[in-house]
Image 1 (cartoon, rainbow, N blue to C red):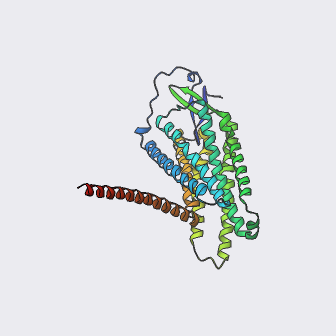
Image 2 (tube, rainbow, N blue to C red; image 1 turned 45 degrees about the vertical axis):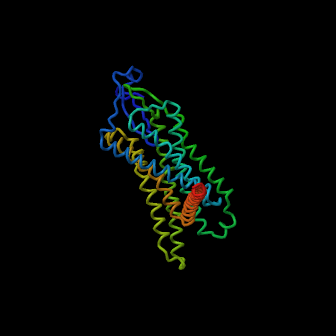
Image 3 (spheres, one colour; image 1 turned 60 degrees about the horizontal axis):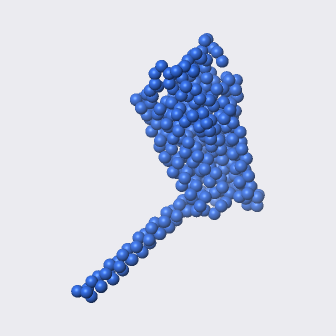
Length: 349
């Protein structure tokens, strides 16, 4: 699309979109000079880089720990099905972050067209999969509180698995635009992985993702936890304030992590009236905060639960006991051999 002699395209860095302008005559030209990244010399870029590295490490190992506990150390139940699926989603999301980090450092896409399409679509699948699973967990808790008898009779691992499957299908559907519209182009020695959206298509995708990935889930989560809190307050047996604090933390974490990302994605639709650098930085910060939700989930949804904490502790204690037992057995064998050798030596003497 031409505008005042310039062609403009929208392109993404994994989970966020931003735009750039360049003359269409220079798109396929040989680079005049090799592109040099300035990220490591900019305080803001280095700060975001450090934060993303921390998110990757905490999210990768934290969700990996949840997968180990929920998948291999605990009996398969409805709750473990939710938490295992959520952890797998966040784990894959975090596993894709190194490419985003490399792109941030190099300011250049070096992974080719196939990975440009696949990485973005995989990250969107897991982003929406994670969000939908948070909604499912909230709705399940609400149903369990409001209709305990029905929940006891009808909540099953099979039903939970079907619901998780539907959530993944919806997440895949919302990631299809990344597969269709992602392209790679080299401009002045810099390779860009971008979205070749027509402005009208871009608007539809942005609004759809905002409604399906934030407004709808946030309203459902708020409603579910409001119902639960009201029910718990009416229950005179409930004296602890911990459930209210946990639920407040869950809602606040979702809101704080995801709102900036969607706000800047929507602001990008009117990029002509906004400063390019502010919008670009805002999208990067918003994407980083959204990614942070992937390492907060295991803390807020899993490790606050007594069953997970007890399983984690017992698993660690068992491993320590086995390790210490093995060390003790090895030491005993060593001492036995040493004693036998000493006995033989004294006999020879």
